[in-house]
Image (cartoon, rainbow, N blue to C red; front, side):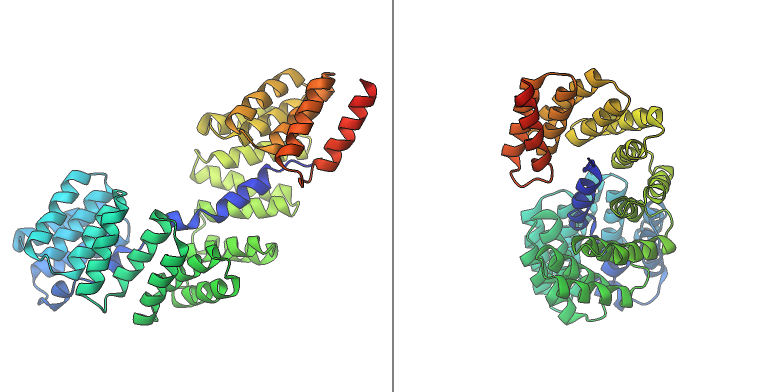
Length: 401
């Protein structure tokens, strides 16, 4: 009788991609036509230095460069917008807003400035106004593909409308066929729209244009998982990890697939690698606990891992479910039942939790309660993999009762 938490976590990972799509600052910087047109004086040199540092994730260094640019040219709108983005990355939202609004006051009809304003609003989750700003940016600068890419990101990560996102990304691809980010966004949109072939085509193009695109490899791997093409998924995740061994999303997804394939020792190593980088990744602790039960070993460690997962994500009923199964494996049915009852509250409507509660209650000799739990599980998921076993258990309990 297997335990489905791993399958659940893989399924969850498939819908996370839109939230992590982002346009690199170096791509966004090319929208500032005024900055490109300026001679390479000190202000512009510092502006480009700032954008380079932003692209490397050095927001404080970028801030210093933009501030130096503005000391030379206080009206350099590119430096103002870049400074706003650097401040946003550091959590200084009020100051970022002031810089963007200063740029808007200087050049209200600049498509690049409107785009920067849209990016600020997107980060602030003011999606409707961000949409207006991106549309305005595209109207003011019809050749600005990155504004359309930002709009596509907004439709994916903000509004959750992959159909509108696909249109925006397709327009960006038409304007800039060599823009890897646009192809990546279009591929992600197609995958959510279940246009699998088109999704693979766009993601392949994104990787060809940018062989170091970690997110494209991750999205490709997730798409292979949806198609149950696990070996190809592992190839994609390994490609990402070869580029960046500390890419925890790929390592987590790799562990999930290895677990699905029954390669539990390898899956365990992948989850441990995740925790080396991100010690607060709750699903990794949960899955390590699950593997310990499956391998019938290290149950004390499994309790520690299970408790850690719950402490990090107390609202996830499946984590309580996993720890309950650990307690069951240790022979502690009372703690298992208590946790499963708690999981039934936090994971309300989850049929597997009800089924597992039925198993534990039946092993405690609580026949009537066990039958009620099994019937609830069947009611919640009449076609569940556990249904046949649950029905047999109900018959056995009823006969004994």
